[in-house]
Length: 214
Image 1 (cartoon, rainbow, N blue to C red):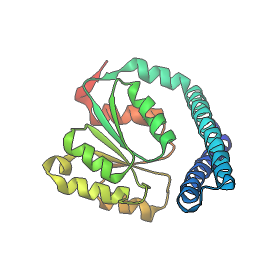
Image 2 (image 1 turned 90 degrees about the vertical axis):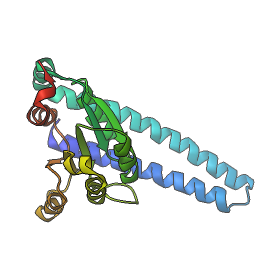
Image 3 (image 1 turned 180 degrees about the vertical axis):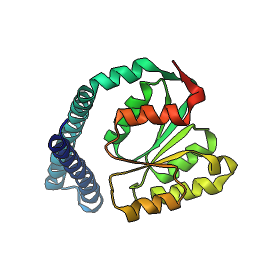
Image 4 (image 1 turned 180 degrees about the horizontal axis):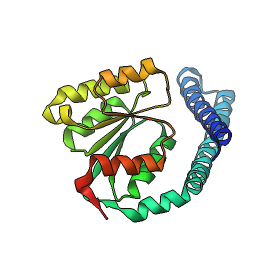
């Protein structure tokens, strides 16, 4: 997928998701403050119809993106997936973006990896306390609450396992100052979005060589 097409895709997707969130909030406000008159009920029904349409659009563009992304890198994709799988490997993805989660999850599953997903910093910490992960992919921009950097700091302070956890920071921000902030919070590696399949293959072989099965 060329850069122009990628940019157009992400702009359209982000716009659609923003519209969906806005409409959901609008429905909540109308239900809370209206007198349930006919006009309010009709407005809510119309908004819900539009919400259903937007949800369908998101599912369609999600599928389209996966196909385009995989076709773009098909030769390398086939080479890497036929080369190895991972033995008893568990990974945590921390990101509130459903499309990002889906793409990364599908990449990891190609290596037979067990994947958990957390959509907030709080959920990530809860999952970390009851599961052991070989790798954690941590997005910086998380929903209201604690961001990725603060989530990493809290994981490091939980216990000895948290101090040793291999964490990969995910960001679309190329600014040195921002990346320095991630590094200062003891993130072992930073990946710029969109993540490439080849990057995942290299990381798995380099960081978890004992779990690679050829």
